[in-house]
Amino acid sequence: SSELTQDPVVSVALGQTAKITCQGDSLTTYYASWYQQRPGQAPILVMAAKNKRPSGIPDRFSGSFSGDRASLTITGAQAEDEADYYCYSRDRTGDHVVFGGGTKLTVL
Amino acid sequence: QVQLVQSGAEMMKPGASVRVSCKASGYTFTGHDIHWVRQAPRQGLEWMGWINPNSGDTKYAQKFQGRVTMSRDTSISTAYMELRSLRSDDTAVYFCAREVVNSSSWEYDHWGQGTLVTVSS
Image (tube, rainbow over all chains, first blue to last red; front, side, top):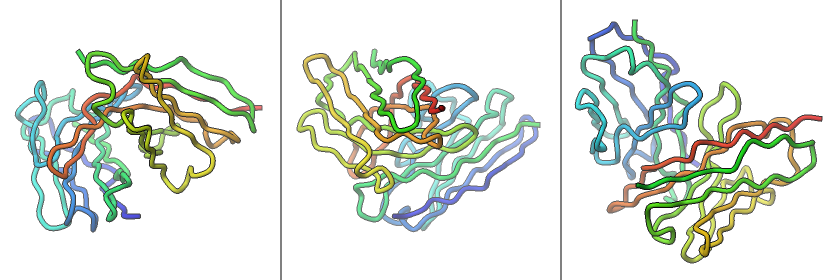
């Protein structure tokens, strides 16, 4: 099965821009989506495949991709954005799901 | 509105089996696959498998093959995940999630609240 690699920790100053990346071979075939998880809570979808932002998600969240890499960008990070972020995609067969290891975003 | 409501926390002995339920409401239950994802303490998300509520077809992660069974009861819009031969490292929060599909892209647009399963002697 494929793997998705994320940086374990990303730090950003309040109001600045944070970029969280996800790299994996399967991303050359399948789109990634992104989930935010705050402590003790279920994940929520913050960026759907094809970089579509779900309703209710602030427009400071945006997505992009290039080759085997997908990125989630938070422009003007807020304190409430501090959370774990996971990328999600499919493996090479398309039948199995793969998650990235997660990135802990710290807002300083 | 779409909701996935899971059963309550479970405390299990090693070697036992646990069944977690996920009751769907607010949409046509047979219209979307249900996936199960778990998260061990202080760890990341781990995909376990999915069930198609319409056909009953399932696909499991290789790690859980032979130990997990996913099922559904369409009459009550509920999906189930049974994990057998529990070990201490199965201690985790188990989530169900509804998958949406759009032209070869997938995502989970709704999640259950999670069910904590603790395995301890």
